[in-house]
Amino acid sequence: MADKKATREAYGEALAEFGGQYDIVVLDADLSKSTKTETFKKKYPERFINVGIAEGNMMSTAAGIATTGKVVFASSFAMFAAGRAFEQVRNSIAYPNLNVKIGATHAGVSVGEDGASHQAVEDISLMRTVPNMVVINPADAYEARGAVEAAIKHEGPVYLRFGRLAVPYVYDSGYQFELGKGVQLKDGGDVTIIATGLMVQEAVKAAQTLADEGISARVVNIHTIKPIDKDIIIKAAKETGAIVTAEEHSIIGGLGSAVAEVLSENYPAKMVRVGINDVFGKSGKPQCLLEEYGLTACNIAKQTKKLLGK
Amino acid sequence: MNNHELKLIAAKVRRHVLDAVHSAASGHPGGSLSISDILTLLYFEEMQNLDTQTPKNPDRDRFVLSKGHCSPALYGILAERGFFDKSLITGFRQTDCCLQGHPSLKDVAGVDMSTGSLGQGISAANGMALSAKLDGKDYRVYTILGDGECEEGQVWEAAMFAAHYKLDNLCAVLDFNGLQIDGNIADVMSPLPLDEKFKAFNWNVILVDAHDFDSLRSGFAQARVCKGKPSILIAKSVKGKGVSFMENNAGWHGNAPNDEQYAQAVSEIDAVIKELGGEI
Image (cartoon, rainbow over all chains, first blue to last red; front, top):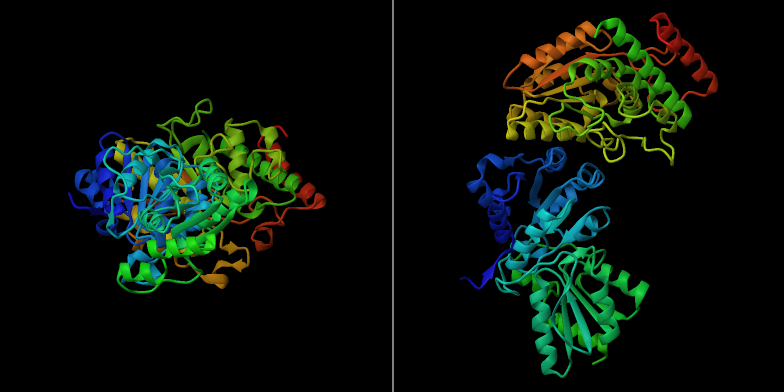
């Protein structure tokens, strides 16, 4: 087995896996080879619908199908699913609380060479504000599979955020995904690093680096950004006193903001947000871009030490 | 149902429209009055397997009001059809009433899709029609579009989709009254020619009179027998139909009548109801 896999690959495989068990219909807007819904299409061609390059229409069509009792997945790049089709997602899907799952791939700057026009770093923020919407950002392929299954079982709209880049496994095949529950990956007493998506693996590495320097960092994976696991965040603040958030998303409105909301209302603690600092991305190799925007274990460790005054 | 009975129901729907927008002191009477006859034929003759006791009956024909701002007419016909009590009508748009400004499927029995943002309803209707095809069911799906609504790009994305997937179980009706909020559609941003556009998108286009039940009935019958493509009835209508001072006046797109105007409008509609032998 390869030691890395993109969450979008796991998404396509999960759709094909669960397609036999559930009455799923998958819609895509001419990107099935990239979003990997093609994997489902090959197995269940009669339940795969290509809407062409028309994301807004796809979302409202998905809503119409969902009114008839089916579980509908609508897929595109995060930029177009959450951005271009925002209003259709809000009005056609979320307002009537219809059972549509938005499979948004190619989120974040790790899209790479396509550049800023295709690098959604605002999607979590956009989707999080919409009532009825659940927002999930899996850290690895196992978590992506679990997220798809949980989304199918959840009645109502879900935004699933997947990446283009192959990422190392954080979990193993025995991982049990639980919607809305944060996962503590490592205990620690001096600080807690709360991460989501591909930043989870970086947070684990950062904690190792910090340990070498005598700082005991707890690591928590928040895969479900809405509804967020308040308990695990408040507990971390109480027990470690300092919080670092890490996400491949704007620091405005994403995980960092969600954690800050929980802390400020329940247990104010010093914190720092690692993420995209209110700028657009650009073209480049994914790894180069992650480094340029500070989305690395090295930067998490650096920001953590700064926060702790060390 | 004979035309006399249909005319009486349509007049009652128009009365509900006036009561709703006057009570709310807001709403959209012009387009509601122009689609009242279309809705009457749909809900009392054309649509099958409607069951007021089981509004979500999976085998029912569906209706999506793509021009969702004409909710007063939809609520009027649903009330006449018995989906909910007519007394709700005067609570339209008010905080303690389920009748939202634009249709909400979670709030009102008989509403098949939440609409209001133009261009989205026809896409949802496509989804329902496609689902019927996937399940081998024979229910039909109807939707009413505005002519101004056809300025939304999504209408044409949906038009492509319906033809591509050969949704012959879909029948759209275009409320062709020629007016939108800011004036004549030809002046604001012309979507014309609409018949040629839909033909070019590979739809079965049928021209009808929106206020003539024989014409509408014939149009729906032609749509029903057309196989392999979606149908659209381009229904020439009069905005504000039935209220003399509202007819063909864009000013009544989204304005409610004051007490005096309401009284005059009601007297005109009530005269029709009385003439047709109905009770006020």
